[in-house]
Image (cartoon, rainbow, N blue to C red):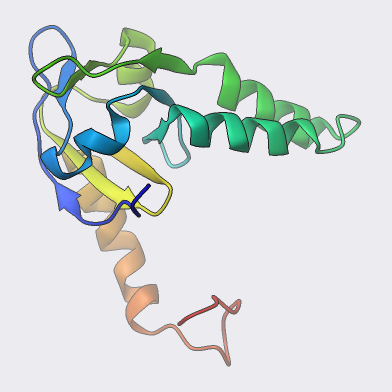
Length: 147
């Protein structure tokens, strides 16, 4: 599996289907899982990657309420799909509502997953985080490996 990178701006059609970026269709052709992400976006994982992460979550201490909450939300809205011949996947209505998806979408590559954002929400998010990104310093911030 290649690393998911870049920014793409597909649109949802009237049936709630999204065209996956062409460069990632081969990696997702065997199936994918869409679920709730953080900051009101959706996470799209190749099926095998979703199961790997889900297994890691199962190893976390279920005695922690925070762990139980996170695992429940991650799995409860998970939706399996296989792209059609045109590279489209259907995003179920509850997931579209969670992410505020109507028509204009931004799909970003984020390593092991794609993230699907409402374009206006993505633009607002970037406006909020870019100043901190631009001024990041290991002297003042949590250390991010590689930066």
